Structure formats: structure tokens, C-alpha cells
Length: 382
Image 1 (cartoon, rainbow, N blue to C red):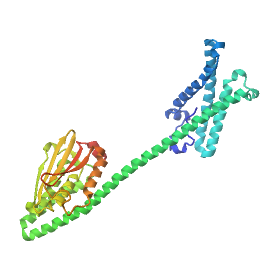
Image 2 (cartoon, helix red, strand yellow):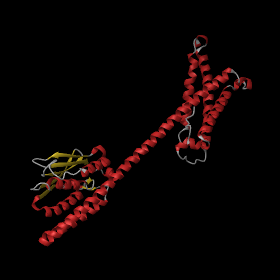
Image 3 (cartoon, rainbow, N blue to C red):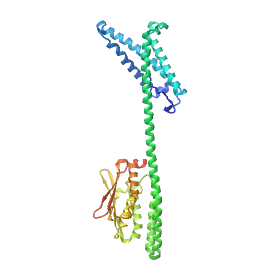
Image 4 (cartoon, one colour):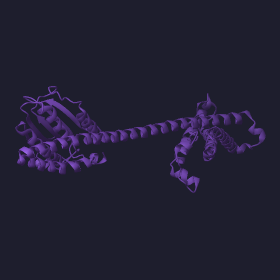
């Protein structure tokens, strides 16, 4: 009874063991194979106990002794088939699949015949005995059992290999999706940041011609923003909520000079939450959307309110604006920034994080990000 695949070439490279027996024992195969062989032989030997009127002609002691003799005979056949399969396993890597299967079955047959011969040594094994109906029938019976077990194991092995390949393909696909997502994020930053930079420089140039103090103030705030933003862009794994808040604060300070009284902002982020880890650039994306699609279309502008709190082990960061609200702006956009943020949250945290949008009162939108509190290992892995 041998656990042996029809082809071992699919199992990948084998370790170079000096002794085959040591390799097999280290792989943990032979103890389980011998145990399974013993179990099959034990089950097969019990057919002797179900013969009609057995206990009517023989005593319980005689039946037990007869059963033990038959069990020993079964073990000889089974271990002989196992030995033949073991030799076939050693030869299989050197042969092609078709000839290898034929050689394997031939060796199992030889092992079965040898085991049967050993079990009948007390009868005096001879050519005439080996041609008897009983010996041939027993040999064919045990060869069929061994071949069936080998076939079942080969099918199971192929299924396991296919499952392993599928799992590896899924892992590679997830990794590729993460890489694609980060590449899309970098592309989006490359498109957005120069646009913001050029607009700000143009406004600073115009202010320096009309209002030098405000122009210089815009340039100072732009420098502060770039100092905070550039390290964040290079860090694609994780940063802290405090750094993200500083980045957003520098960003709105720049826009406040351009928008004047139309832009007001306030931050309600407790100091104890500033050291919490938070994905980079997500908070800035929410603030950018709020200003572009909420406050800019409104003649009176509005207020940006950034708040953070803990809720049952989760870090909740919300950006509320008092702009025109859902669907009222002509610059509705395609939702790429929010879709990208949701995809990044799913890639990093799975279902443990989410981005939700709700209507603000009396006007505007509230965008809320929920992430697990301080998931340092998750963010580092991402």
C-alpha cells in the first residue's frame, strides 16, 4: 500500500539526502505509509471472521490463531507491494511518465509476488505452488488493492499541486493589484501636484505685483507645505495622523491666501491621537475634494472641519465641509480620488476599514475614514 504519485517531476526539486532511507523518514512519509499498510491489511484480514458457520466448527482460540496466520499473510503481501512501490518511486524521476507508470506497476506486481512467496514459506514455495489458483488469486487481489491506492494518491497529489498553484496565482494577483494601485496613486500625484504647484506660483507672482506681503506669505506657506508633502509622497507604507494633519494644515494655509475669507478651517485632533499610524495622503485627498467640489463652487465659500476620535478600537477621521453638497457642483469629477482611497483601504486593511460619505447639516458633505487603531504590522506589511 504505497502513497506514490504517478509522476514526481511535478513535486519540484528534492533535497540531496545521502541515504534514501534517511530522506524518506525525514520527509515523514514512511511511518504514515507503513501505518496505512497495516490498517489495510488488518481490515482485509477480518474477512476471515465473517465466513458462515465458522464458529460452529472451530473454537474461539482456533479462530483467533487462524486469523493471526491470515493477518501475517496479508502483511506479507502488503509490505511486499509497498517495497515494490518504494523501488518504483526511486526509478520514476529517471523515466518518462508512460514507461515510468508501467515500471511502477511491474515492480508493485513483483513485490506482491515476493510477499506472497514469503507468506507461504511453510508450504515450501515452488513453481507448482506459485501456479496454483489460490496463490494467483491472492496475488492479483493484493496487486489490485495496491494499484488502486497508488492511483488514488496520485489523483490527490495532482489536486493538491493544482490547489497550490492556484493559491500562488491568487497571491501573485493580489500583489500585482497592490503594485498597480500604488502606481496609479503615484501617477495621480504626478498629475495633481504640478497643477497645484503651478497655480500657487502663478497666484504668488500676481500677489507679489499687487500685494507683496500676501505674496510672500503664500510663498512661505508653500515652502512649509512642500517640506511636509515631499517626504509623505515617498513614504507609501505608513505615517502618523499628526504628520498628515500638519500636511493638510499647510495645504489649506496656502489656499486660504488665494481664497481669502471664502475659506475657513478648524482642526479638532486630540494630541494623544497624533502618534497613531495613518495611511499617507488620504486625509489630504478628502480635504482637496471638499475644497474643489464643495467650497469653490459656492459664492460664499465655507468651512473645512477636520476631526479625529477613537471609537471601539477604531480610529475615526472625518472631514466636514459646508459647501454646496452632493451633485450641486459643476466640477463633479469622476470620483477617482475617493475610489482610489477606498481601494487603498481595502488593500491595506481589508474589510476592517472603510470610507463613507454623508450629508452635512445645514449644507455640505462629511467624509469619514475608519481604520483599525495603530495597525502597525498591517501598515508595515502593506
